[in-house]
Length: 126
Image (cartoon, rainbow, N blue to C red):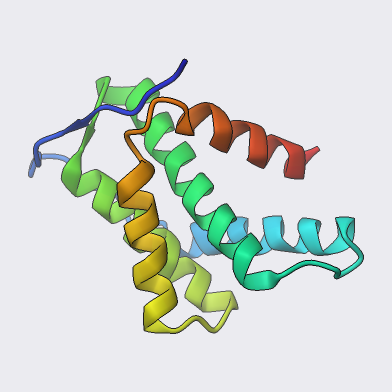
């Protein structure tokens, strides 16, 4: 079981601005889902799942490839940049953005969320 470990803020670590890259990735994942379902899916639901799971996967990659944990400032930068990237391709309102950020913050440390996120995204990428 993989788990994300959130640690206190570390001001010596900064996430580069990857907003556009994250937006491109999310737009690609949505287009794959749209094609898989012949357009028969609920965009807001799919977008919500993909954003949250994608941000979870990014945090886990940061943890495993770098520092063994994710400082809270990096966690916040990840979800903020992912949401900003999504806004490049999709019109989302503030309520949706806040609900996605809340959902992410509520589950990011859950013991099974990393495995769930990886499995969900891998199904789309196949």
